[in-house]
Structure formats: C-alpha cells, structure tokens
Length: 306
Image 1 (cartoon, rainbow, N blue to C red):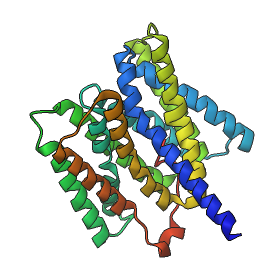
Image 2: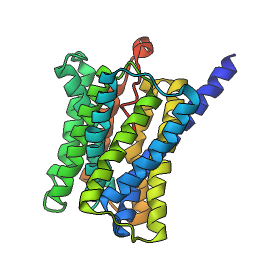
Image 3: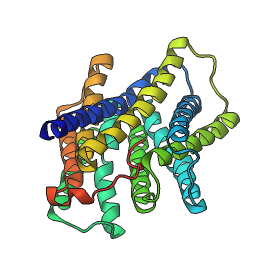
C-alpha cells in the first residue's frame, strides 16, 4: 500500500514537471512563429481551436454534455473570451520585444499579485509568509527591470506585466466562482471561447496562412504541447500530489524557459536580472506554500492553468 502511494506520488511529480516543461515552451515557440511571419490571431486561433476540439472530445467521452447553469456558462465564456485570451495574447506578444526568458520572469509576478488581490477581497488573510513573499517578489521585479531600463524594451515589459496582472485577476475570479464544475470542463469552455475571440479578431485583421510548414508545426506544437499535454498532465498530477505541491513545482517554469532560451537563442540575463528572477520565484513559492496541516483544504478549479 505504502509503495503504491509512493509510486503514485512520483508519477504525479513527473506529470507536473512534464506540464511545467510544456508551459515553459510557450514563449520559446512564440519566438519561432513570429520569426516565421505568423500573426498573433492566426497562432492563437489555431491553438485554441485544436485545444478546444481535443478537450471537448474528452469531455463528451467521460461526461457527455456538461450540465451547467447559465451563470457558470456565461462566466466561463467571459473568462476565456476576454480574460485568458487577453493574457495569452499579451504574453506571447511580449516576446516580440523582449527576450523570452525575461518575459516569463515578469509573468511570474502573478502568484504574489494573486495573493494581494485575495487579501484585498478577503479570500485570504494577511500572514508573515505572504508579506515575505510580497517583499521578495517586489525586490525581484526591481532587480529585473529597475536596473536595466536603458537596455530593454519598455513596451515589451508592459506587455508581460499586463499579462501577469490579467492572469492574476483571472485566477482570483476563477477561484471564487468555478467550484461548481470540473477543471476539464472549465478548460474546455475557456478554450472554446478564446478560439471564438481570436477567430473574430482574425476575421477583421486578417490571418497569415501563407507561412512555412515549419511555422505551422510550431503553431500546432503550441496547441498540443503547451496547451493540451500541459493541461492534461497537470490535471493528472494534482490528483496525485495535491494542488499546493503542484503549484510549487510549477515555479520551475521560468527556470526551464531561461535555460531553453539560452540554449536555442543565446539569451543571457544580467546578474541583477538572474538574482531578481530568483527573488520572484522565491516570492511565488512563499505565496503558494501551504502548511501540511491545511493542505487537505486546498482545491483546484482549473482556472489556475491553461
């Protein structure tokens, strides 16, 4: 029995790490699709259409058509069509102007922004741990962007930080209202609504279909690896190791992105930016760390990742 639990826990850890690796590839693949001439609307329309089709096939096979009340349907649709689609677009767009490694470190300010919003809306209480996390992340962001304004693109920084803020609001709202459905169903609806949003945007701004086969493969890779595989392994992993442990393991995402960006693009962070990244990640860990005595109370709604 004990061995079985240990094996299950190890499998869960591996699944979350696979998920984290998939998410870490998103800004990396973004560099390739933009270099290949693909537009943002083309990339994200294809991403979310493929993801939505796969998620809904799984949903129908497991649950049939989900029975949700109108309010939940509407909320999920707005979260995907407005919230997550905006975050995904801003984050991917930021890599046009700043290194992928820097973009992911800036995005990872979101755990502490979530903590601030949760305290402000009385979903969580102030604690020394959260204050330490806030302090650490603030110092980290200062080191990342405050000492190098002359060397990095301000617009790219604003795009990445904007994605972080929107993602934080998205998570807080999702945590409050999506406890009536499953992560898989919420992800399916959010993916579908995001696909509709970018289809509408693309129909007005134009799609870029005349791109190379390699660029198309990278776009499909965003859908399959950075969305479908990443989400499904994350769902499976949290069932085995819990949401708190999965969230802490997920802080490896910016580390993976930094390493991959260095290997593929030769991106190098300054010493101050690397130190700032460490502080940001530490702040994120402090914001999600849950004492063992309260771990059983943690739930996952599906809004935290997609």
